[in-house]
Each structure stands twice: as structure tokens, then as C-alpha cells.
Amino acid sequence: MTTGVLAIVNKNCFYTVPRCLENILDKKVHSIALNFFEKCIDWLCMTFYPAYRNLYQTKCVTPLNSSTSIIAEIETALPVASIDPVATARTRDLQKAGIYGQAVGDAFGLMTEFVTRDEARALVPDLQELIDRGHLLITDPRFRQGPGAAHRTRFNPGWTDDTDQAIALVRALDRKRHGDARSEAQLFADELLQWIRHGLTGRTNAKCMGLGTLVSNVTSKPHFAQNPSQAALDVWRDPRFSFGEIGMHYRPAANGAVMRTSVIPMIYHRNLSQMVQKTIEMCKVTHRDPRCIASCVAVTMAMAMMLRGERDWGRICATSSRVAKAVLADEMSLIRACLAPHEDYQALTRTYQNELEAHMLGDYSVLNLDEGWATAAANPKGNRIGYTYKCMGAAFHALREAIRFNNPARALYDLIREGGDADTNGAVAGAMIGCYFGWDAFPPSWKAIPDQAVLEDTLQRIQTLSVRS
Image (cartoon, rainbow, N blue to C red; front, side):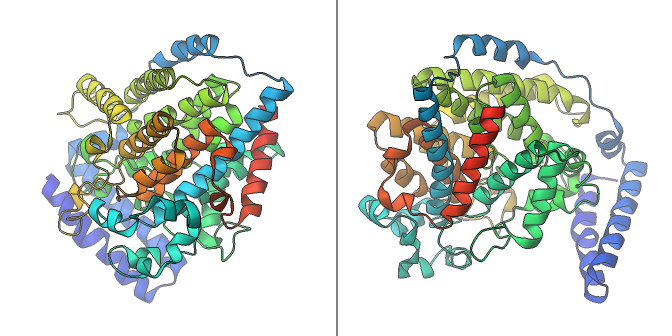
């Protein structure tokens, strides 16, 4: 069997047959039939196509754990996480600014999500307008028409699924604190499933909207609730979810994990080893690509350093890059045996480490945040707006510019005017900017974002968990 045949199986059978079944069977029977159909396809592929069989049956090797010693070294060099009342008050201020910043950046990004750079600049031409009206700017008539309008008008003004999932993550960690016997990963999986079915509890007109393709595929696996990391791995290494192609370049490395992990350093910044471990575990609930994990670690390490009192941007960026690249090497060693025969493990590791650093240091001309969106319908492989490194890089560049000009508002404004997956980029950038500048840097209109009761409840949980961590 060839890759081409896999693509045919993917397009003509895997999607068509279940849709036909869904027309005549109820959802439960359809789910059973779909799972049986998947197993049949897996058996055929593994029986007749050795490369596919290797992807599923070869066990992963022991990780190198090269990041452990690096994190321990960095821990001793950073400012101590003080329990001094003044320092604690400052940390609480940064935590509040971080969670509100995530929601604000998310809401702003919705205005220009799924449009090109030029289209985004036409939609949001004026910085002062964004400062004065905040999230309510999206109610302006110009946002109800033109590029991206069909997507924007589905949402009420406010944040999207990006912040919903971050809040769901905090709730899962809080449930563990209250004695739930399940693992934190299982609890987060349960929170995601509840969110998909019912929306985020407490929100006005709560409903699940904006669910990404990768998360949708992972959460629909029958074993997701019990073993989410395995479900994520199954989807990641399945060629049917990578355009029928075999090779790591085609595997999903989406930004759906990095968008929600900003809450982890708000809780675990006192212990960097624990913080990195939690970042990895919560990323793997839905995203198993090493690039996803490394980008999450880069963001959470930077935010943890800010929460610990570090103000030197060069040191923050260099340290985050060093840890993220070490974690990337660890995770590449874990999936080494899952690579296709033609893929060089060491070369891939170096390539993705170099690419990570290039994105962390790059400006918007390098990041190209709307890459492939204009031709996405005709060439879905070329659509790269959801690549996890782009989101991470956008957040780092936005914060770098905010520090350079001492202007957080301008930094978020410039970011959303790049288009692409703007709400996700804005959510991560907003969280990082908030954790650096603090609550007082936000204009009054930004502090008036809807569903503040949900954010305040989340903040209280974060601060309680932080004290106990």
C-alpha cells in the first residue's frame, strides 16, 4: 500500500462512510460503527504497509531528561519566590493581569481572526479606537460584513475557546486539590468534554465554539477520558490526520495547547521543575508533537520568570529558549521510534530547535502570521496560521515590542493587525504582557470585559492553588 492509497482511504472511505451512517443511525450507534471502522482500517494498514505498522507498534525509547539539570541550574540563578507581603501583593497583581490579559487579547484577536494581514489592517485602522472601546469595538457595523464576518458574528463580544480552555484547566487542577482521585490529566480531559457538550459553566450564553480540528479529533477518541495522552498520541501519529502523508512535517503541531497553558506558571512559578512538568502533562492531554510541548514550555518559563520578579527581557528570552530546546530534545527522544524510516532523528531535533529560536526572536516579517490563509481553500497544506511556533513567536515579539516602547496597548494592536489565527496569538500575548506590566497597564475599557465573575472565580482558584503549590 502506498501513501497515495492511504490518502484515498482517508478521503473516500474514512469520512464518507461515517457520514452516511450518521444519516440513519443515532449518535451512539454511529460512534460504535466509526470506532469499528477505524480499527478495520488500522488492521489493513498495519498488515500491508510496514511503515504505518512501525508508527503504531514501535515503543518509544527512554527520554534523555537533558532539561532536568538545566532547570535546576536556572532555579538557583533566579530571584527566590518570596513570601514577603509586598512581593506577594505584586505577584497577585501580575496573576490578575495575566488572566485578564489572556481574555482581552483573545477578544481583540477575534476581530481579525481568519483574515489576511491586509484585511486585518483595514478592519482595525486606529489604535485609539481599540483603547477607547476595547472588546466592544467588534460590535461596530464594519465587523458584520466582509472577510471573516461569518466567523466573527457567531460569537458574543468577549473571549473565545482559547480562554475557555485555560479556565477549564484551572478548574481541573482545583478539582484535584479538593480530593478527586483521578489524575490531573484525566480531570482536564473531563473538563474539556463537559465544555464541548455544555459550554463553560458561568459564562453568558455558554456554548462550545471555535473548537480546533486537532482537539476535536483527540477528544472524540473513545479512550480519551481515561487515557487522554494516548488518545493524543494516536491522532498525532495517524497519517489520516496529516493529509495522508507520512513524515513529521505533516503531523499536526497546532497552537491549541500553547493558548491555554498561561495559567500554569501563575500557579507553579515557585517551583520551576514542577511548573515545567505540569506544562508538559497538560499539553499532552491533546497535543503530543514535541514542537507543541516546547512552545508551551517557552511561554510558561518566560511567565514564571516574570512572576518571580525577573525584569531583564534578554535574560527571560534566552533562558526560556534554553529550557524549551532542552525539553524539545527530551520529547523528540520519546517519539524517536515513531518517526518514519527516512527521517533523521538528530537532524530533525536540530532543525526544530533552530526553528523554535528563530520564531522566538523573529518579528512579524519572519513570523508571517497569515501564511497560506489567502489560498487555504485550494491548498490546505499551505495554511500555516495555526502552527504552534507562530503563536509562541507572536507572543514573544508582542511582549518585546511592549517593553521596548513601554506601550502594551500598541503591542496588542500591532499583533491583531497581522491577521491569521489572531485570537489565539492575542490570548498568549495578552497573558504574557499582563504578567510583565501588571494590572495598572490596562486601559479602563479593557478591564470591563464581559463575564468578569468567571475571571474573578478563576483568579481566586489560581491564587489559592499558587499558595499551596
